[in-house]
Image (cartoon, rainbow, N blue to C red; front, side):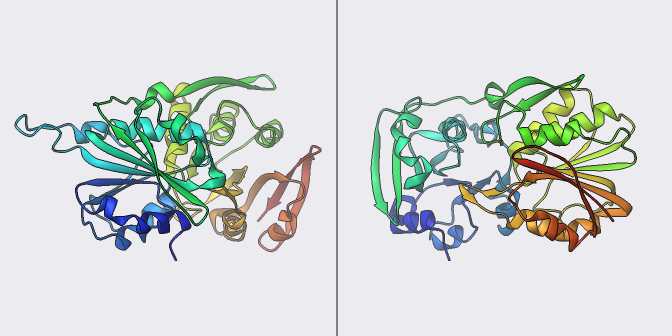
Length: 347
């Protein structure tokens, strides 16, 4: 069944019936078959939905839509490769929405439209402010299923450079400093969250072999692990293209090497590891969702070498110890704060 946001788009499908359209971060692949226009393309920052889409050149998984791909190569047909319009699904943070709007404004023809659709509780009512830098002609098109649909008219050509949205911050834990890259849309942008700090503060004195930073985000845990233990072979994975992009920038900023993988859970992880480190996610979009972490815990034993170790930090109220014991019987709490527990489990 389509999400409520996609249902609102189907209610207004005449808006997207003609021309070349780019749909940004739909929560499901079915929207592309629900609309009649064959010239609807997909831009995905989340690997799970990207995997559901047809494997063709109409779908791109990336931190940003590369404007260079849309630059017209034929001077006799100005803007022929730009899109007639774009549809953005409202993300969790307004800062992320602003990044996507700036990106789409550079991908849409002058006289084109950018639509923004989202649940009313998602921040969609700030559409006027979010569009202000690219348009002064903004209209509310529809309101249904506790969602709203807004449209902004793009009058002129815009440029976009994702590096202008990247922020670097020096993060210090104990005596170690790492320079970490952040983008809007990354968990705890611009700061070290206390759960990750608890894990980093309690990293083993000597990590060896192959180490996986699961749900790596900006790469902060993996960077500290590799900086403290430069001999490890490090892999970082995340479902988010923004996260893998930031992880690569963070590694580069600290002169570290690692394999960075986009993966829905552990699906793309083919190697086994001596240690898996994680501050796992508990949201899908704007909704609380523990299913990704539950699945990861049940499957992590298959990603561990014999006597391999899992170190997982989470809110104390979550029932993860019992779930971990179902997969890795040797579980202990190695550190805690008033809000978080750090668990260690061995295969």
